[in-house]
Image (spheres, rainbow, N blue to C red):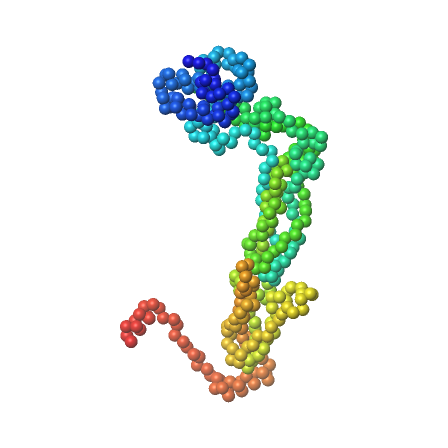
Amino acid sequence: MSQDPYELLGVERDADADTIKKAYRKLARQLHPDVNPDPESQERFKQVTAAYEVLSDPQKRAAYDRGGDPFGGGFGGQGAGFSFTDIMDAFFGGSPGGGGGGRGPRPRVRRGQDALIRIEVELADAAFGVSRELKVDTAVRCTTCDGEGAAPGSHPVPCETCRGAGEVAHVQRSFLGEIRTLRPCAACRGFGTVIPDPCRECAGDGRVRSRRTLTVKIPAGVDNGTRVQLSEQGEVGPGGGPAGDLYVEIHVAPHEVFERHGNDLHCTVSVPMTAAALGTTITLPTLEADLEHEEDAGVETSFELQVPAGTQSGHQVLLRGRGVPGLRGGRGDLAVTVAVETPTRLDPRQEELLRELAAIRGEEQPTGDVRPAHKSVFGRLRDAFTH
């Protein structure tokens, strides 16, 4: 059988690397000992593997084309070796743990991580939107080396250990011959290049930490936990790579008057007993009153709440469209709960007048209006059958 690696793989002498790899994969699937255990197939498998090892390596291929013998003992002999990685490529489309053809030097330039900061805003700012200036501390591109990591005037150079491949071969003997596996180069950490003179500013990382000021526009209607995304304002990646995103998480501070429930607002207003009995009008602030409206004089900062005569404590008035604007449009409501205050201290004259009122209304000795408690399910079923 011919010992010419081109004939063994069935390719032309000017075949490119992809053609050679495809030819080897096809033959490896046919001749692998797990598929064809006969001695002749095993021997040919070793030969095509050794041939591929020569033709896949530019230096060995060039040496063979010049008439040399890279192994010194012919193909298929005891000195022949093969790449376990390429066998895995042939059967599974990728090397073990290599992610399917992901061999070679790993890039120095990579995308940076996302960053997160939390800020507190007032309820009115969360409701109607606001722009805030933020001071953020993130990694930014090193201006001394422009992200390259090398000192000015110098550049990364190919690694002498792996010759720029980012990987080195480790050979192990087996019943098939010598199995060659590829591992990341320890000298260059898999990058394929080394930086002989690192930048003193960033120590070769291509980025430094810096405090900067950003303006974030908080949209109307945000609530606790809402995150505003600022694209490419996060951490710059290694090697001066593109920055990740910055997320601004909103925390809404408690309000002294209003309590938020979704897009609705709730508040409680206390009125004296006499005002609840006779009816009154109360002036209440709107949420807009917390904003500065120097240029917009038409903004309503208060409104009149009508408390009808005979209002009981706990009575709720619902005011449509006075709540919080929604992120997708619309606006919630304002629910005002009336709390009737009963006086706890009376002077003699006030007590005299109240006793007189009680006598007029026949309430000097009230018996109380005892109402039955809510019936249970069984009680309602019983009543249903007895009526």
